[in-house]
Amino acid sequence: MELSDVPAVIMLVGIAAYVVLAGADFGSPFWVLTAHGERARQIREQTHNSMAPVWEANHVWLIFVLVVCWTAYPEVFASIFSTLWIPLILACLGIIMRAVGYVVGDYAKRDWVTWLATVASFITPFMLGAVIGAVVSGRVPIGNAQGEIISSWLNPTSIMIGLVAVTLCAYLAAVYLAADANRKGLSDLASAFRVRGLAAGLVTGLVAAGGVFVLQGDSELVYEGLTSGLGLVDLAVSAAAGLLTIVLLWGRKFAAARYTAAAAVVTVVAGWGIAQSPYILPPALTVQEAAAADNVLIGLMVSIAIGLLILVPSLILLYGLVLQGRFDPAEGETPDRPEQAAGFNAGDLDPLGPPKRRSVVTTIVVAASGALMSLAFDGGIGLYLGIAMVLGSLATGCVLLAFSLTSRLDQAEEG
Image (cartoon, rainbow, N blue to C red):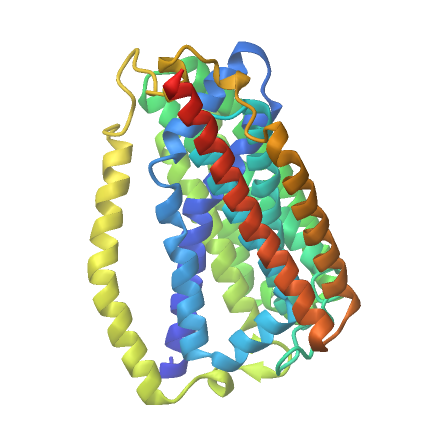
């Protein structure tokens, strides 16, 4: 292995960690949305209690991968982000909206929060999968904004990998939540998530199997890498780990199923790296050609080593405390909500009160207009103005939401 290959391997490790850890967070709202009756309340509380302590820490790995990419392979970073800026912005919006669900979920109407979190949780993994599909299928040319801004990420490979990412997140969420419910002694909930995990595992396997045929017709390089040599071995190991997870879930071995599900995901990411090697932007740019100077790579490796000495022990402590139940609410404990203390029902709070509706409508119109301008103009002031309108509307929307919520909660406390 050359020095130039090391950051690429580290990036794959970071991507695998992000999928394994953040994937369950993105998948959990789907099970909340599809639950009904009393079970819906139990599932909602279980997903919130399980994911809330760690959801923010999970995104460390995404930031880590981005930093390594732009430092070690600056030309690759520029090419990807200038061509695929639309799905990447949508993925960022999804992450932000998912966070809103955690921040205001205890205070706002549950219906719109659930829908917001669910839509955001579909958008982010799908868009990140579409970005990977664009790279895999060779639709990201070298250089600044050289690729097609629409067809680069709306193509058979991108759509297929996006769907695999969405189903995989739902699958991981069901497996992890079943294990967590079992740890807490909630056998009924564990059984409910077990059934969901079995169903999601079957769907994910079928989508992934169909994806191989999509790669055959649209991404021949990666298809050949996956169906021969070490790539084929990795594919077999991933399939075996997935099947073993199903067997363990069927036998109610929830703790072990959590690790085999994670192993299946890790081998999928590893298979991507194996199949695409030695290219980082197929079919033209290899890892060695894209790498920065050796002194930059050495400095990066030293920085990563120092950072991991701080990051890894902290994350081990956090996840250890979570798995030990140190963040579980005490029996009978309910969140301390200002509106409840004042005699209000959370469902009575309308975060978009009448005085704000006109501002909200204006913000949405400006955002939509900016998005259309961004698609209509290939460059120049029209493109940049459209992007500015979208980002400005996002910031304005967040401010309006924050002011609306805080004012309502202040009224509740005063009442």
